[in-house]
Image 1 (cartoon, rainbow, N blue to C red):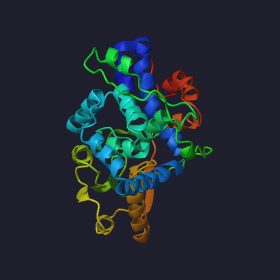
Image 2: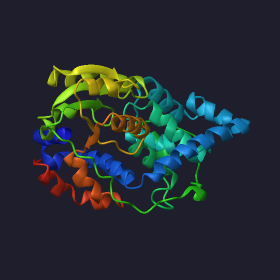
Image 3: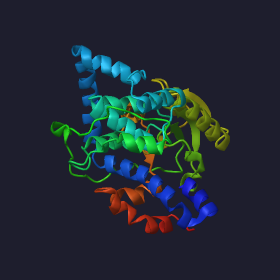
Length: 337
């Protein structure tokens, strides 16, 4: 929301409409997966199964190593692999081409490609990344895959890349097409501002201290759930510093461990407050804290941002159902050109 507010103030809706639509795409993927949490579990199982299959298939294993080490001989793919490994970023269009070549030209499992990309992206969001790969593979919009085109890649990169040998046909893994019916988003356990709290930061929400709706929160201790890569660590370090500046008297407990909940309880904390834990790798770690909190007679709470609460109900079908609600959602958030 902060990004859209800034962009609208500088450019207005007319000039920024496409950019804002891209922001809503991320919201869409998040809300879509939140209403189909079983897909994340299926994805994790598929990654594990596909990794095991590599061990039994020497040819595919070599193709996987070549792909992840930029040795395929496909100039654009190897270039994007090196860019991803060295910078932690790829343009969204490049991600689509990369995924398509991985799946249809190299014949590698889509889930392994999605996991490789997620683990190396600075913005490796579980929902956006996983579901975008499913879309490219033809598993999201049934039967509609995305096939990379050599001539278009050459044109879009001003001749920097001229790939040869790209697949001309998208072979969709029909056996993996699973699109469960949407369920209602999980309700968020409500925060009580009047109760002494342990503020638990995670990559789910790194700016809780900026939210006016919990500005009066009584924070006695601050801890955080460790991330999965150096990018997460840097972001969490910054978030802790900002939270400490907002609540300077809070005890800084560091990375969460088995002793953290007891230490917070000793500081007078009666509830744990964290950002809403969306479907993804944070869930099992948050569940560990929740169980520990209950054992220490502390209430587990999560703050869900109004942005997500209002948008996610429109993320049950295709993106268009959300897109047509964008003007109303912007107005409800107090965002105008």
